[in-house]
Image (tube, rainbow, N blue to C red; front, top):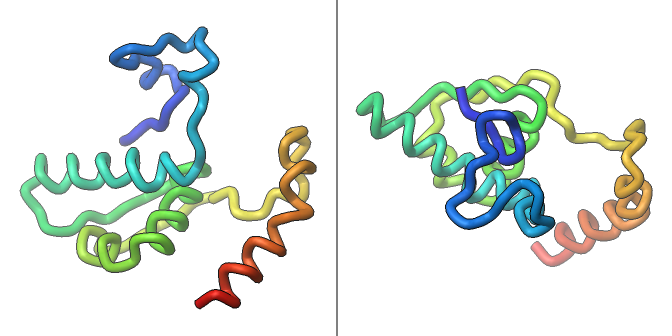
Length: 117
């Protein structure tokens, strides 16, 4: 089982402390591209298998969608099956203050990305 940054088991950093603001300066994107990729590769190497079955819960599901959409070939070659339980993909019911700041722009960003493809 993996843990993402900021959990009880992941508060050790080589140079930053959880009391420092910079410790918390990361995004879902970074957790997907760097943390999830490292976790998947660690499991594959440790188990000596070419592909894994990935089960993501909450943020683990969210990051798997990000990883799969931004690195589809890489994800397909290292993950056999993805099972996501309660991934956070829609934030319209969120009470977090930052959500209301970004929600008006999400449609614009998605449409812009699709139009550029």
